[in-house]
Length: 556
Image 1: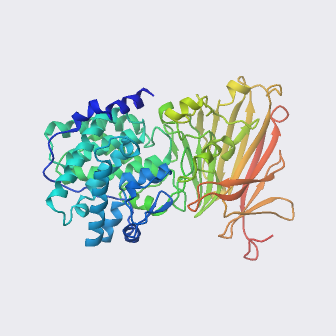
Image 2: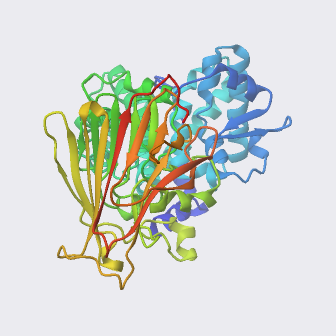
Image 3: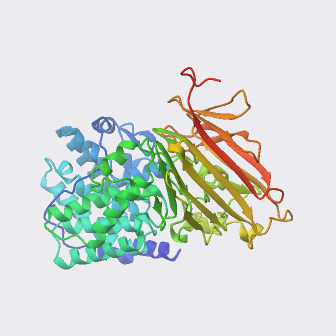
């Protein structure tokens, strides 16, 4: 709250004189952009249709910066200007003129009005990077007055960001602010001390936010992808300007690339944990082209709190970590000990994920423990989100009272990979530990698990505080589900694979579920639930077995 108050003060009239100063004479270099571009989107924008953040807005001939649009994601995307890459991909004079016109509109409407979404630190950082990366198309054929106005506005934004970046929301926005300032110091004429200062502060932020295993302090796989899309071009820009990049930048990139592959399923999507939504596999492939390690992904990310099992064509990724720091937990989930399983290019067991561009009303549902393939106790999440509304309006809904001392131990043997992990998220309220043991064996054909529940000293759970357990397995929407002639639940994939679920300790039930992380928006799906009382049974065993398909069909 204090950081936000300071940002508001720095946007007020008493501070604005600090953002005036000398206008750069030219852009020295346009950094590369690794994000995918589509010339057809440039055509849509030319005709007044802006397909941004999952929402198409038609301007009807007006400037998009004059419209009153309530969707914040769309506004963040509009003011971030990453869509300029589509104009560059179009490569035409018409696209360049349209880009120049839209930038000119923004300068006239928002250039001197330092407030609102357009000037939030994260959005300002994205806009600075985009204007620098695509300055060649924006300035193509520009007359001198626009050229000067563009550089003057860019300089004001850079000085403003330099003033507020320390008070930017912690996590990705603050780190992106440091990245933008480093880009600016390299791409525009600047004194040596400006570049050195930007490099030093970037190194400090990278060292703080990028964990030793390459994950991000937020524990969100999407942040690894998004930050790499900025850090890789920045590393190249240092080289292009014959400047030595900080060792922290080189080290962060070399750790993050394997971490990105760690979270990747066989179809190219990223595992859905802690705010991860739908991914476009081509985006990930474009980043991983720069990965020189080319080895198998790591099996452990102990600092990020994840485990990976990979045998044959089967991949399992599991959350075995703790709650992220409070300041970066606004999108974190209570999915402790949840896992996802894929076979080849098909996701089978999933978490619900988030609808990245959907209504915020669904986010509390997606963050709950019940939306993950793990166990819930007494229909309660293993962490709390319920802060007073007056506070959430300022800082968002942070994750509180989650696991503090998780434990995870690998149990790998020849031909088998596995782990045993536990968390204490239910101890404070119910006095119960949850331990999960998972192993993948027989060439990736058998996934076995045991979920155990016990007291702080290993004693049997008492029923007085509640002991109702539900072990959930959420299915990907493409998975068919039926019972075979032995009344066993069978999961059938479009690739003609069958996985049979067996549990000697509980009768599987089928319930409805929602998969939020689909590219087309939320989809209906199903979940398998094993229910029992922990006071009567301290553990439940389960097994998924891949069986050959008979007669080339998935039907019963």
